[in-house]
Image 1 (cartoon, rainbow, N blue to C red):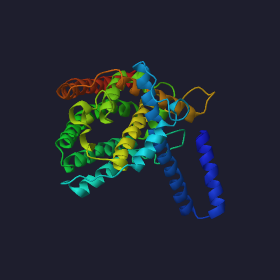
Image 2: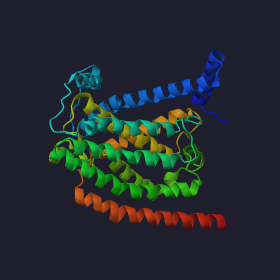
Image 3: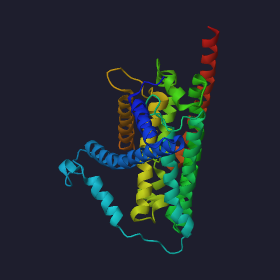
Length: 345
């Protein structure tokens, strides 16, 4: 029996729609459209909010003010930037592979939006609570490699091509230790279902049971989302902007939107997989705890990005294969031993 407030509101809305429409299939379709629209609005709003937040955090760390002109305290600076991007000319360079170049930012946004369907925002509040939810999350997020490579290859620019090649090396190199790190959670839970993973943390969060996996996930999540200090894909001082050097206007804005959507995704996944999801003291609803934990995780990732210098390409890849992967395998072994000892006792 689900007890979340959002779940109760959703059920009430379903009952109202059922009484008005009366056709179950149409009610299900309309509920899906409403949920998808809400998720897309959350994703779009996160880009505006996190852009301003990151600028303010960066300014605070560097002992300066940050955006302070547009709106009170600079609160509308992100809105002004969005309007500016919408007004910019859409420049199409010569010599590009047009279809690949056009599809790249669109295809990059699709997996970033699709994975929101598998996030449990509260008890019973998840759009697609499938039995292989964690597997689908990993599979869908891994598809972001292809659009980056498409954009870099098709742009007819050496900087874009180098950025696309870096994407393949970086993301493939760090997906393997991430998957092995998350295997410890799957072994303890006995399920790939996202809601089951959260429910298994009702007493003890996995950050306590899986500290090694937590540390590995933090590093690999930053790499997979192309966040500093692992943003070698778009190393500004080396290759301008990597795969999206030749993009302008709203095409460039789609890359930007996908990046900040991924930032919130890794915050949500950290909350879901290691920090107990919606679980928390009873004086606040579950979804409030979920978003509090998520926002704190996002602030942490932003702080890390503006504190440490960008990693070198060769040292970063060596760290992934030679350090994180062996530690992830050791964590799987230790988890298996711990489960065996627990069952025997």
